[in-house]
Amino acid sequence: MSAREAQGLIEPELGWSASTTRTVLERMVAKGLLIRRAVHGLAVYEAKKAKVDVIGGVLNRLRGLLEIDGRLPASAFSGSQILSETEIQELEALLNAKPPVDGEAK
Image (cartoon, rainbow, N blue to C red; front, side, top):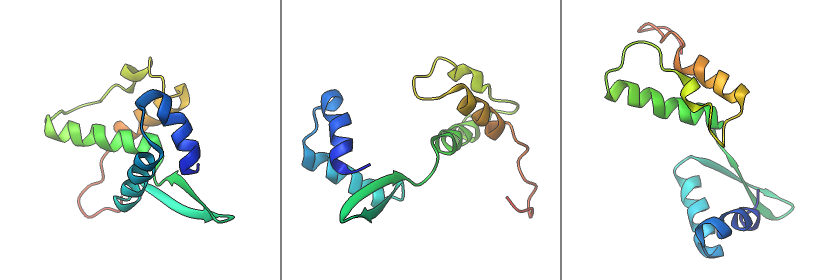
């Protein structure tokens, strides 16, 4: 979406100005979270990774931080407003996939 489209979604919730929205989007590009491309001369932003991959990565880092062994139940997110049932199933598979053995391809 364009910065203007993002602004239309963000402003009612956060009250950000258009310049703040553009600044945050550009910082997210710099951090590798978003991809910026030009479409008919208009800057358009899209996520670099799928939300399930991002959430799974965060939860797997948390697993390591808390030294959790065993399965993580993605069903805990069944009431989520941003994850569909299919995405919860994908997250479950990602969280509980067997980690690669040292030296194996990921």
